[in-house]
Amino acid sequence: MFPVRAGASRSGRASCPGGPHRSELYEDVPPVCWPIVYSPDYNITFMGLEKLHPFDAGKWGKVINFLKEEKLIGDDLIVQAREATDEDLLVVHTRRYLNKLKAGKLAVDRGWAINVGGGFHHCSSDKGGGFCAYADITLAIKFLFERVPGVSKATIIDLDAHQGNGHERDFMDDQKVYIMDVYNRYIYPGDGFAKRAIKRKVELEWGTEDTEYLQKVHTHVEGALNELKPDIIVYNAGTDILDGDPLGGLAISPQGIVKRDEVVFKAARSRRIPILMVTSGGYQKRTARIIADSILNLHNLGLIDKELVASEAENPKVEKMIRDTVTDLTNLSL
Image 1 (cartoon, rainbow, N blue to C red):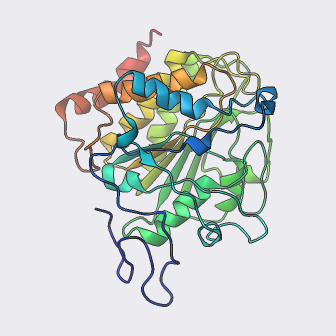
Image 2 (cartoon, rainbow, N blue to C red; image 1 turned 45 degrees about the vertical axis):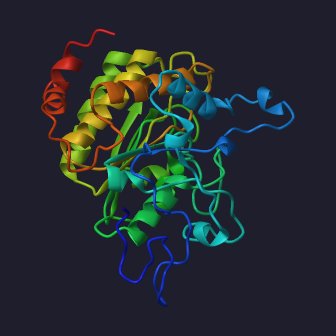
Image 3 (cartoon, rainbow, N blue to C red; image 1 turned 90 degrees about the vertical axis):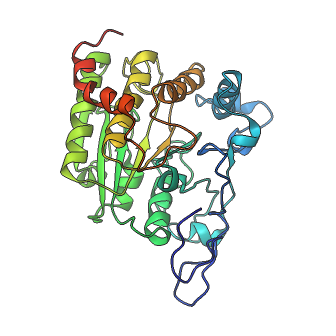
């Protein structure tokens, strides 16, 4: 099912010197599975001490449970994340800075994929930060460039409340990667050097609300994808923009977050661009329910489906919704 580069086996092992390193990350995934990646290991426990931390260390499992309750998925239909080896991590990280990697390339094959977890956008190739231990966004893009024929340009749409300084530092001088970042200008990390890598920068004020936020997201997502059509979109869909988030400082409603994800997926589907979504930050207990509601909304609108592939966005229902996006935002009533 996966495209295979000449000289490599279907498991991703290089069969000749100079090819990609040996890797077990890209196993074949049965077509019956949803391109939703998850592992129970995403949820962190440490004798109860995790409850003292502002990050909800169990939110990814909660998202999956909500989707199961809605009968969208079952355990046998989820793609189980695989643990990376040191050699996998060395694609980006120095040997002194290795950790785990949970990633996949399903988006290219199916047209979309969601990693229920990930989005550690403050980590660069040699330095962590902001609750981020490994550079999964950088790794995902570099793996795709190395292993998937036809993938040579990527766009990162980072809509977490915080600046994504990790991947920005990693791709500072890489013209193959276009970065759009929308964030609260007054909060962590305030990395002026990393901002030089942002091709489309949208700095928000404290307490920005739905109407202004969604109009800016729509305008700049359309602008970014019109400026450069990538082979893959990596969408960092943080929920720390939610009103009341103790670290985000913005005031977006749950409905606004669901609408935001819809806007991004419509833009990707209309251009036949594969999209990989990661869920990133979000420091309130209710964010798990919102992520699940957003995934259900994307499915109900026909923007994601188990069998949907990149060339199949010709559904008249989907096309009409895409044409109506501007009107929807203008007449926003959340």
